[in-house]
Every structure is written in C-alpha cells, then in structure tokens.
Length: 534
Image (cartoon, rainbow, N blue to C red; front, side, top):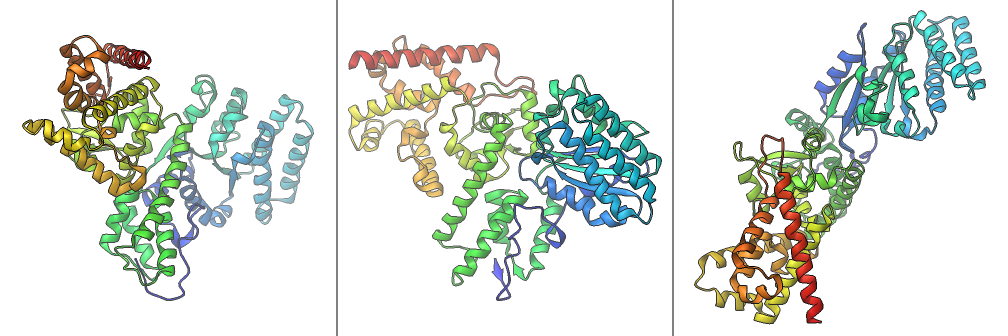
C-alpha cells in the first residue's frame, strides 16, 4: 500500500458500520435482484441472509436508501428499522406504523391532510388498545388497509431480524404474513438476518409458514467482479495497491469484505505511523499487530457461528474427525461461505497433510474462507471440545507417548528416536514431515504453536511411529494384541479423514460406534495404568 497524498484521511475509518456512498463497492447483481423483487408494480418480500459481518446491512441500505426520495415521489415509503432494539411484539408493530407516519410527513403535497389525520388517529387508537390483542391487531389491519386504498406502499428494511424470535409469537408471524401477502394490506418486507426465516420462526415455520412469502438472497463473500470494483474504489482515494499486497490480503482474509476493510484500515494507520517501512513487506512488528487484530475479529465471527451451532461442524468438516455433522449443516456452512470446496492437493499444500472430509470421486475437501484462518483453525482445533470423548482420547494418547519417549530417550528424544530407527526410511520421513508441520506452525503463529512434535500427531502417526515401534512397552498399558490395536487405530484414523458418500453420510453409525468403544477402552486403560503406577 502506498499513500500518494500527504494528509489523506483514512478512508477505511467507517469499517464495521453501514458502508455508504463511494465506499460501497460491488454487489451490483444483488442490488438488481433486490430491485427486481421489491420495486416493481408487482412486488414481493425478500430475505437477505448471510454470515456475520458479510455486508448484509450495507447491501440492504445501498439498494434502497439512496433512491428513497425518488421512491417517495412514487408513493413508496422506505423505512429502515433496527429490530434488535425492540423487545415486544406490540412495540414491533407500533414501530412499523410510526416509521411510516414519519415518512408520510414528507408526502404532504401528494397526500391529503385528511388521510394523514385518519392514519394518525388509527395509530393513536392502537396505542390505547395494547392490552387487548384482538383490538390491537384490528387497528394494525385498519391502518394498512387505509394506506393501500390510497395507493401508498410501505416498504420496510428490517435489520437484525434474527432478534424477533425472542418476542414474536406464531400468531404475530401469521399477522405479519397476512400484512405482507394479502392484496388489501400488502406491505413489502426486506429482512436482514444470519438465519433463514424458517429457522427464525417458531417450530421452523411449520404452523405460520411466514417463510413461504419470501424470496431468499444469500449473501456471501465478494466475487471476482466485486473484488475488482473494491480495489478500483481504493485507488480513487489516492492509494496505490500492488498485486503482492492484494495477494497477501487474499491469503489472510479471503474475499470477506469486512475483514478486507479492517486490514486496510490498520495498514493505512500503521503506514502513517511508520512511514519509512517498506510497504509490501511490512516489518514483523506491523505484521504481528495486524494478525493479532485479525485473530481477535475472527474470534468474534467464530462466536457468532457458535451461536448458530455451526462452529464445531466447520471444524469437523475442515479438520475431522466427523462426529455429528449432518448434510443440512454442511450445506448451511457452504451457503454461508464460511467453508469452501478445495482440492485435496491444495489442502495438503496448505496444511501439510490431508485432513477433514474428502470425496474420492471429485477429489474435493473443505477449507475455511481464507487460507490463514484455515491454518488458524487447525492450530486451535485441540481447544474445541466438540467431541469430549475424542478430545480426551487424543490428549491421553499424546501424554502417554510423551511419557514413553521421555523414559526411553530422555530430554533429547528426537535424536534418540532417529538413531534407533535410522534404518527405517518410512518412520524417518514421517518424523521429518511432522517436523516440517511444526516449523511451519511456529513460523506462522509463534508462541501459539506447540514446540513438542507429538502434539502434531494424529491416530495413524501415534500408532505407526510410536505404539507399534515399541509394542512391548505399550502393551502393558493398552493390553490385547498389537494387530488388534493396529485395526483400532486404523478406524480412528479413518474418522479423522472420512470419505464423503455423496453427502448423504460422512461416517456410518457402525464405524462411529466402534470408534467410541475404542476411545472408551483407551481412556479406561491409560487411566487404570496410571492409577496402578502411582
């Protein structure tokens, strides 16, 4: 990044807010989709959905608010409502009507004072009947019928619509459905939410069917055209961006609009502060500060994904093992664009090993929306307790192996291991591969990454490199036969990297049951051995 003009203000200072004007880039096809759905003489309702901080609100705003005055002259009243600050169903409907009355004041030249007085009178009566839901709803209906008879359209952008699930009842959803679909009242609703309308409704919409009146617009990451327009808009602020810089941004945050803005904001400020730093190879200090900020914001996104119950599912698909992911959850993550398809070769190049679900027919696996965050998830995966039994098993086996190598080889165990197995080319190559992964992780994430080689082992490594290599030592802990444990660790390795069977089933119930049994045996026997030893 090169700032051409001294004194230039940081153009990215509005990141995280509703991005407007020249700062809003891309999404042209989505804007056209919105216009086609809600602005014609025949119009309908639209639900904008997507991953947290993906730009849903900015899209809704920039689709309609810049042409609000033009639409007002066509008797189409546009209201933007932040639903999250509303806490009751009555307040919700009152807010709709209040916002419309506010807009009507701008339409006095085209709307008679008598009509406006009647609408205000209905609103006043409505506020007096809040304790009588029947009368309250009748006044709501009366208000919108009068609007429609006078050829006035009420269009609402309902931001943070997820929050209505805490106060709208089935009856309220049915009322809203009637208002937005019946000819005598028809209002236009544009909802902005993380979840689908069906997921927001009680009983998944099986009773009210409110979701049935909506067309869905799933907003994902920037596409190629959006990215091109974004960088062109950056250039308009007298900022020069090299291809190397863009490539680094792509690696760090992918095509996530909020995170791209955040990164550019931080780089801009740091370059102003450290003006002598080479722009395309930022100092380690600056790079570490930027990555820490990205890490913290990625954590915020992960917390919102946890609320959706999808965080652990993403970990399972990207890294394995698969425990309780359904095909529906897989599709939700793909539609969110939190995960993406990636070839197995790309996955191995990225993480230095083949992890997560893979489809042998298409050679497709999964990654997060950016390479950097995929690497970060890999590093953090041991902290995610999505399958306590598995987490405990891996931890205990790694601890057992560490105890074994400490007793057998001492402090400089890696050298001792190399000497013992110097004639085993396969084992030495596998250890070198683990060392490569460790070095890569330490280089990328510093103190966040473990220094112990065993912490980078998975079931097949655990068995092939350590347990089978000194079965006499491990037999006293695990018991049974070496061949039996070879089969068991093969099963555990398979669920680490399951094959996807046409997306119908990731791991069979039978294999999962066996894996659980093996985990329980491992935990029980290691625990018992330690108790006896102590």
